Structures are given as structure tokens and as C-alpha cells.
Image 1 (cartoon, helix red, strand yellow):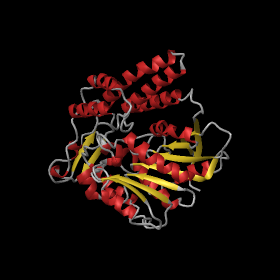
Image 2 (cartoon, helix red, strand yellow; image 1 turned 180 degrees about the vertical axis):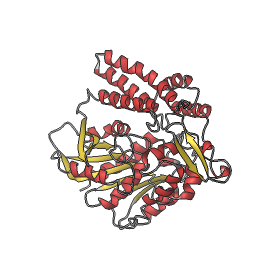
Image 3 (tube, one colour; image 1 turned 45 degrees about the vertical axis):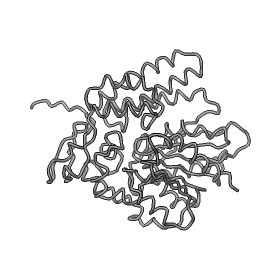
Image 4 (cartoon, helix red, strand yellow; image 1 turned 90 degrees about the vertical axis):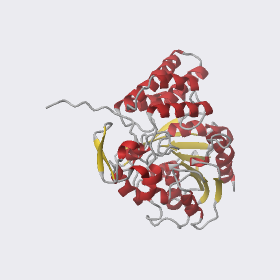
Length: 418
């Protein structure tokens, strides 16, 4: 028998369909068939590796997602060593740059300089596994990212606590950080990551709350990072278990907890606003898929080959959704997540800040309207008519600006309002 060597490649959605009949194409990254009946003119062509490199560098230069915080020089160095869409080649190039900063950090005595270098390494390892750790090289990079991030927190005061919660024979891993004071219990924000962001990204952003007397707990959304379950119609139970744990802690004010979900994390936030309305004082839902985003036509025309997403949105979704291996599986299973299909849309909710961008190509603005127009309590809305996903723009209303000027102020008001 001939020996066949399979290599892992960043999947191009252009390979998903040719013509107008059902085709099978092998994803070299996992050996599975990717089955789709989408016609070629129905989907956008995903970026080639050269286009990915150009766009990644451009985003790094302006500090745009998913390269927020990466040094443009480091990005240029890594990209110079990437020639193909091979996933392990991608991971190796970014990890090589990260390794240098990790090694430098371990040799430094200054806590500030050690933290700076570990953070730099973490950001590079994180991007080495982006958008999901779906090859051996990317899995190795993800483990290094976790290690570098934790080491970056060693000198923090107040400290960051790694919390492990037993869950169905597995464990939920999250980061808890509370203000360094004896005046607790403290109000808290639970932050849930999106499709390709991780709890580490959120923990770094939410450190801004500590000096304001508010703590945070960050956790990977179902199917992502270290989550013990994949995304499914019942996966919100993992987040309910997080709340179960947090309300037992004497240093947390169980009556003052809000939750923030980003993108796919926004879906879980919207669902928790309903099913956990009694235990959450408020919820921020940022570009949440609600109903239309899960429908077959939207998947075919807007998700496959989406160029607002840097690359590989299809492999990312296939990796996080339960019972899904092919595009046809995704088209079958995704609609089951719809809040409308689940009979939840319109039920009582807690207080909500609903956010989105009219020009979002990943979540239709109609989903934002559905959420705003249903339920039993008035909702706050922040809708950017010029914004894309998460309401972001290339300049002006960028991710950090939205976080600082919109999300944080709303959370502070909600948590401190008597």
C-alpha cells in the first residue's frame, strides 16, 4: 500500500465548490470530506496566502483585529517566512518570533520587562494558532500561548486566579481577578469569548476594571479554547455552571453580575440574558447571531468565503460546532441554535445593551433588530451605521475605542446602579 502524507492547509473556501452539483473535496488538514452544494457564483473567494499576508500586515499597522497589540515589525518578520496556506507553516513562522520574546522574558529580572516580553510572546503564539488550533503545529502554539499568558500575569497585583470548575467529568477553566481590597464583595463582569478570540484576550482588556472596584471572570465560549463542550443548543449549561460557582464566592456580590459576549460569545450572552435573567443584572451582546445568521441561505451567501473575516471562517466553525464535520453538516446543524427556533426569542430578559454594525457581513443587522424588538424590558442599543462586525470601523470606532467609550461605561452604570 502506498504511503500517503497529508499536510494541513489553511482551507480556502474556493475549494469548497465548483459548478452547481454536490462535490466532495478533501480538507488536507484533517482528512475529512467537505461536502457542499453551493454554486461557485454564490460564494466569495477567500483570500490567497499573498492576500492574507497583505491584509494581515495592513491590519497590524492600524491595530485592527485580529492583530490588535501585535508589533508591525514582528508581523512583517513572521509573514516573510510564510509561503503557503499550510497550517503548520503558519504556526511555525509566528511561533519562531514568539520564542525569542519568551526566551528573553525568562532571562529578565525586571517584573515589568518580563511581563512585557511574555505578553508579546503570548500575542504571537495566539496568532500562530488563529483562528483555531486545528493542526499539530497550531495545537502546540496554543499550548505555548496559554503558558506565556499565565507567566505574564505572575507579577500582577492584585493577582489573577486560574479557576477550575468541575463540569460533567471535565473542567471549566477561567480567569478571575478581583480588586485588591478588603471592601468586597465586589461586582463582577463575566466575559465570554467569540469564535476565534479567547479568554486571554478578554482578561487583558478587562484589567481596566480593577482600579474601578470591579472584578472580572473570563471564559472560553463553548467549542473554543479550553471549553469542555462544543457549541450546541444546550451548551449554555457550561456558562450557567460558571454562574453557579461564582455566586457561591463570598468575595463576589452575587446581586451585581453582568455578562459580556463578543460575536459568537454574543449569542451565548443573548441566550443567558433570557435563561439566566434572574441571576444577571445585565448583559452586553455585541454582534450576536440570533436567527438569520444561522440560516442556510446566509451561510451560503455571507459566511462561506467571508472577507471581513481574515481567513478560514469555515474551518473555525467546523471546529467549534457539535456534530459537524462538513459544510453540509453546518448547514443542517446551525439553524438549531436559533433563539427563535428554540422558542426563546420574546421571553423575559434582564437589562441589555445590544450592539452591532449595519455593514456587518458576519451577522445580519436583522438579527440585532430581532433582539431589540422582542422581550419584556426596554433595551439600550448602540448601532453604528458605518460599522462592520462588532460595530467596528477601520478608524474612529475601533475595537479599543468601543470597549472604552461604550461597553465599560454601560457596565459600570449597570453594576453600580442601586
